[in-house]
Every structure is written in structure tokens, then in C-alpha cells.
Amino acid sequence: MARGAYISGWGAYLPNAPIENQQIEDVLGHMKSQSAAVKRRVLINNGITRRYYAIDPATGAATHTNARLTAEAIKNLCQTSGFLAADIQCLSCGTSSADQIIPSHASMVHAEIGSPPCEIASLSGVCCSGVSALKYGYLNVLAGACDNAVVTGSELASPSLRSAHFEPQIRLNTKGSADQPGLPFGNEFLRWMLSDGAGALLITPTPRPDALSLRIDWVDIASYASESDVCMYFGLQKHADGRTSSFRTVDNEGDLFRGGYLSLTQDIRVLNERLPQLMRVAFGRLLERHKLAAADIDWILPHYSSQWFRQPLQNGLAELGFVVPLEKWFTNLSSKGNTGSAAMYIMIDELMSTGKAHRGQRILCIIPESARMMFGFVHLTVV
Image 1: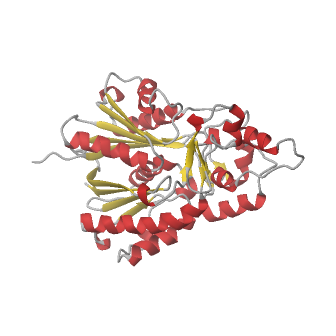
Image 2: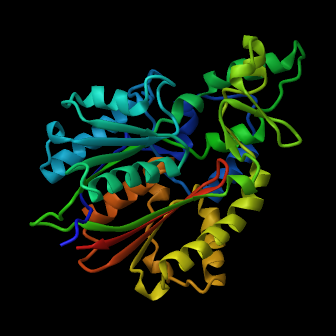
């Protein structure tokens, strides 16, 4: 029998108590320069009603590092599956918000869980970094290079969303003027969109004998970076002509903050114009490669940053003849928040932990990444 690869355990972790919309500024801090209209519009469009931050609301102090969030997700995976962290042979971690540039994120997670020596891999990017981490572990197990892999997706967005983080940028941009400039829309937009969380999956060459598992049928990732300007960025400044300059070229601390190099930014024009269009192209490519039929899919797990994108996504798939009824779309965006690379993991954990999935059902995970247009797809079968 050919060797397979199965998701035989799952775990998620969301820090602290959930934060409702009216509590966001109590945790992230209030800003005079922000727009109430922008906040209201973004929150209505994204459909998120609660999210989680690794911040103590009472003190404003950080409660977790990204590595700690990831370790907690792995801990929950181990508790629910009976797997021991000490037995990990391959640890593959994806994130866009590592606690540091060097050492790698997976190194820090490995140290945090304190398990014996094992292979590690750190996958960077944004939302698709979690899919890339999954693919690394999946192929490792499928090839027989290891007998298990723990793969993770995690995000710690809150440190870059606090009012204190934006103060130097705003202060330096006033240039002594009495006028208080508004926070650029590309920064403020993300302040109401992103939150913290982590998820972990266990991949083994055989399914669990006493419970449901998910057979990994294939993982498909495609970049369309050559067909799009930069859309979401951190550590760059984007110029009007589309060129970018790196924070590593800046020697003056004031210019670093004034230019917004260290503020997470979204180019909304590129997001709205290119993401839906390239999503249709990427999905059309997928249909050709894997001969997918909508009738064969029992669950779609779509990762989108905002409920606003749900209808364009459905319409785009329908234009390709891929029509899946709304009741088969499973998302927890409204209650868990937009957790980037962790979102797919957190959806899988909830779908499987709540008993919604049944043997023989097929699951299609759809993960678009807007940073410079990348798309990840995962096809699973419940066994």
C-alpha cells in the first residue's frame, strides 16, 4: 500500500477573553487621529463581532509572544489527540508576525515547547505561510522522511495595532504643525481587521484507528506576484509608481517612523482590483489541474479577511461553473477574527471538534494572500 499523509490531530489557541467591537480601543488604545467613520465602515464590512488580543486589557501589557501562542496551540493539539510533544520529528511553522527576524520562528517555538531535537522549518509570508507550513510537513511524511510532523500557523498582530505603535509616525509627520494628521487609511484599515491566534495540526502516515482523521489529498500553492503590485506590506515604503524601498536602506530613525516602514499597510486599490480577479485565475488553474467538481465538495473552508469578500468569491467561482450552496461554506471569521496564517487551522479545529464533519466528506480549503497575490488550496477527505 502506498504511504499516505493524514491530519490525525488538531488544536487551536486564542489568547485571553474575547474582545467585542466596542472594546477594541480599550485594549489597543484610543487615537485622536483616527476616523470614527472609517472604523464604523470597516467593522460593518468585515462582519467580525469578536476577536482575541494577546494584551492584558487592564494594563495594556503583552501577555504572549507569537512563539508562546504557537506552543499553546501545540499543547492543545497534544491534549486532544494523545500525542506527545516529545515525539515530534518535524516541526513546521508558518507566520507573518514572528517575534524577531533572527532566530527563525520555528526555532523559538521549538525552544518554547522544550521538545527533544527534531527537524524544523520556518515558512514566512502572510496568510499562505500556514499552508506552506502544512505542505512542508505533508510532503515530509508522504516521502517517508519522518513519521510525524506538527505544522502550525500563528499570528501576533496586536503589537503593531496599538495606538502607542503609531504615535511616533504621527508625531513626526506633524512637523510642528498644530494640525493633527489622520492615520493613513492603509494603516487604520488593518487596525480594525486583524487579531491574534494560533493553530496546530498533527500529520501522520496513517489515520487514527479510534477517531476521525483527514486524509490530505493534495496541497496546491500558486504565486501571482509577477502580475500584481505589492498590496500588503511591513518593512517597506511603497511609492506612487509602485516601486518599494526597504527599511534596511534607512539610517535615520525619524525617517523610519515618518515613512511608515514599521506600520503594517494595505493598498486597498490593489486589494479590490487584483485579488478577486487573480483569485478567479488561480481557481481556474486549480480546476484544470485537479479536475474538481463542485458536487463532490461537502465543505468549503474559505479564509477571507472580511465578509465583504464572500460574495465576490462565490460569484467568481460560479463564473467558473463551481457552485457550492452557502450552507456548505464554513467560516468562523465573525467569532474568531481574522488571524491570517492561523485561520485555516482554527477553522479545521472547530469543524472537527464540533462534530460537523463526517466520514467520506470532502473539504476544500481556500486561502488567498494579498501581500503580492498568492493562493493556497488544500483538499481533504474525512476518514
